[in-house]
Amino acid sequence: MASGDTKTSLKDAYPSAKRLSLQEEEKGEVEDYCTPGPFELERLFWKGSPQYTHVNEVWPRLHIGDEWGAVAQPKPWAPEGVNVGKILVHCAMGRSRSATLVLAYLMIHKNMTVVDAIQQVAKNRCVLPNRGFLKQLRELDKQLAKQRRQAGPGDSELGR
Image (cartoon, rainbow, N blue to C red; front, top):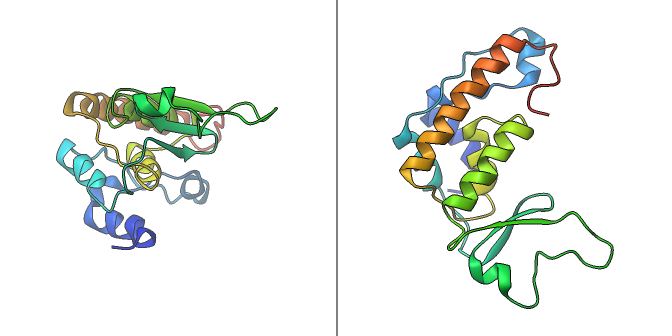
């Protein structure tokens, strides 16, 4: 499956993972968002992930890596000259713990659903949070979806 086809096919395959977007809210066409189950979330990671490397940029200036990528010279993720602000989140393998932190960051600070965050990270890095972390991400997704519904379309403070 081509990476460009991923979003459309996932939306069709997982109707419970409908995207809650601000544009839909502004149009008054809000569809109820329902957090996918753990098995559905795991399947999102199985869709054509990139080849494993030590460090990958998954969001502008935000990288996920393994322990080798954190200590190796030269550091491909490290700031060059005065180009500061690059961040590396790493753990032993760079697949579960660090990925979970980055997914949670995208959900909270970039106003993404768990599905959107997974799709964003999986485009650039092969990750698979363990089931305990997936459970926590699901709970966070439910809390954020509830806050978004309560805040309404006029509240731009949420998730920023």
